Length: 98
Length: 371
Image (cartoon, rainbow over all chains, first blue to last red; front, top):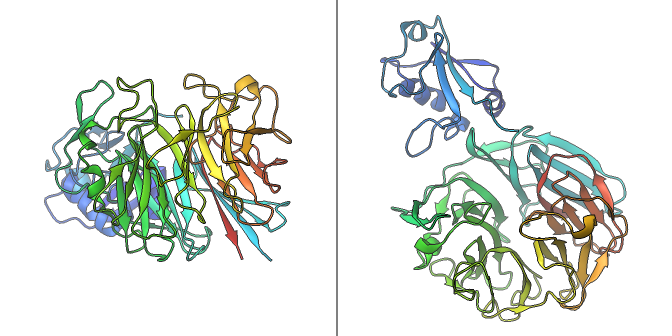
């Protein structure tokens, strides 16, 4: 199981707590994790990445293992610690706005 | 006993205000979707417990919520608004071509006959329809494919389709308004559209009387008389007596004819309301006095309605979708401000009182009269 930490508003939208777990077929990449997340929580479709382009929304970031993976290609392998479930994949909202 | 439900979209959530038919004591429910921008909520005239809400943010994009119990609980429905085919480009602020990009839903207009059918006006300007209660959305692409489409350009708030008027007497006829393109009408259910802006004058354009390019802020009609339209334009208050074929200015004695909202009394088709705003550079009431102006003659002759409204040091705005009327007798009139107040008049505007004073900035106000 892959652990995913969601930002506050997406937790509320999905009706879940801070962290969810999703089954992901290998290889474990940003794309496969987000695909699995959207299957498990269809109300999140279009909120993390654009419906059509599948690109990350610009005011969200993807972190894991102390690294910013936001600009990694979506099909790059995520760290082993994420793939093994030891570390979570974090979806973080930009600290901006009023 | 009748009741009133006021649906308020704000910069930081939605609020549902309810009262019995006396409109004296109000219950405030919310914030729903706290912390998120709710552009618009509107209920179905066929099933008033069905309400659609548009949540849009730079972080999470567009989310559409639907309630089937009058706003007590909500579920998410479809949020994919895909333009039909290759959407091409429109004009950007600097006159360069800019790709058509969906940003948000500005306005929902539920069908008058089918609770599962609802129209959505979006930015970048397009008209969508759902026939399954918001589950899926299809563009009514004939509008955007009008020959003038590539020349549409955004107003300060974006290239938004903000007003949808369904003709109660002719289901094939729809009026829409886009800032800053103008008003368009279809007479064949959306297949083809024509601009209906003759008589408008906009001095910010190279050709002030061009067929397309006017910054129309809002249009309104009385459902008993859908051939008569009223308009608050960027500057100028206008009316048309022939379904938009031509317009005449009816600003008359208004202190300023800039503003955003315009609405029509529920029982008097010639009684209309506007909230004059000082100018396009200063979006607040002239002299710091919040005044609704009422005309009982369909324009030109206006009276200031001030009782119960702040008459000094008031510098709020009233945005284009933030005024509505109920259908009780006397007609109730409601509007919300960027200062977070929602004012109500149970006397057709003669006197006013705030329902709430301290909400986040109000983006939209809609009213349901419940039996």
